Amino acid sequence: MDRYRSVFLSDLHLGTRWSRPEPLRKFLGKVQCDFLYLVGDVIDGWKVSRLSHLSESHRDILRRLGSIARVTEVTYITGNHDEFLDRLLGLRKARMFFRDRVFHRTADGRSFLVSHGDEFDRVVNRSRVLNAIAEKTYDLTLWINGGINTVLPLVGMRRRSIAGLLKRKFKYLAGTFSGFESRIIAEAKKAGLDGVICGHLHNPFIRNVRDVLFCNCGDWVENCSALVEHIDGHLEMLRLDEAGNLGPAAGALNTP
Image (cartoon, rainbow, N blue to C red; front, side):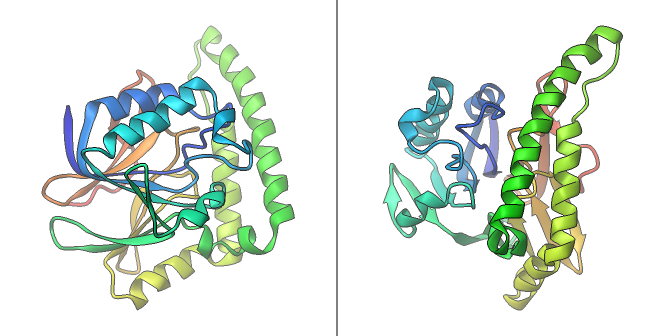
């Protein structure tokens, strides 16, 4: 068992064919933590209208999260894809506490805003049509990506995430247009916080932005990543490698 003080997961997108429940199941089975934060878009309400419509492997993830909640404090922060759960905000259901945002203090005394991040994304909040087009394009690219990655290993080449690249490019351009990064950093600075932890971007990273530690959990569609807080309070980004093991994410700043 790998022991952490806190684990942050986002963008599982259960209910979509692209969600990765099997590596997630293995990850959940080998970690222990005091605090588990589900940082939005855990269930994709844009794809499934009822939990009963989830596949067995996806329902198994929910059952495992429920089991974890028996011994761990689990906070479910709703995102734009699972906003149908907003009616539960402020309540504790299935041993999970539902919130739209929370504040987390690390073991070394730093304070973080934890939010899915869609509230700071004007493109999502003001242009549903543009966002719907982007989602359709992403789904199509995932289909194409799957075909390409079936062929690449046969010719001795590594799998490539074209869909993930396009998703990150769109989120970057949309974030620049909407001022996503500047708004979320300004929110943290206004509240006198040391950092912010979010999802939404599907891009795992830890970086310093204007003296604010900006962390994104990534996703369990393309990256299979998790942000973890060690017992001493330092943060680390973990990401699934080609061998199926979770290890330090290349290129991510891991805090001392």
